[in-house]
Image 1: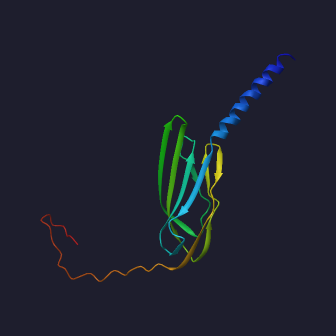
Image 2 (image 1 turned 60 degrees about the vertical axis):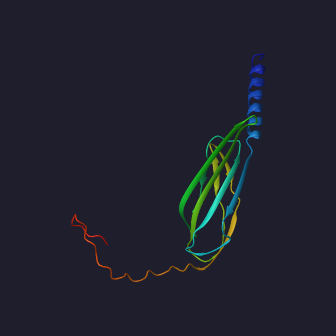
Image 3 (image 1 turned 45 degrees about the vertical axis):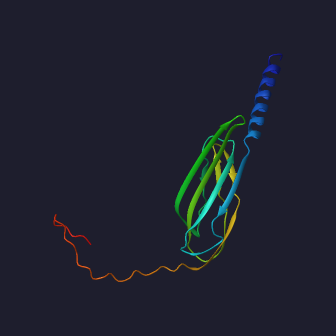
Length: 154
């Protein structure tokens, strides 16, 4: 019985140490869009910025975005080391295209750091009208140039 008590105390001290470690890992999440109102087919940027004390880039977990298509993604990750420890800044920039008109809320996105997940705040966007795509003009009647190798340049 005397051996059991010291072991239990040691386990309690270790778990208390991990609890204080988690408090230092505060994460601040900001979400923004470059346009609040767009047209169907018009690109806009959706940005998730994360600041805090972490050492790896967060994994972005998207739900099924039925009303939008992700065109591209860019990730920027900075780490600052100093007297206060490590402070990281991660930016995830997504270029989205709306597929239909209406007022939408981009929500349900999560960030995963190992086993911890953070919810990303929702953003509202209004989609009105259709983007006008200019029609290409008729090609001019330029003669084709024939290079010395025998191929045809158009």
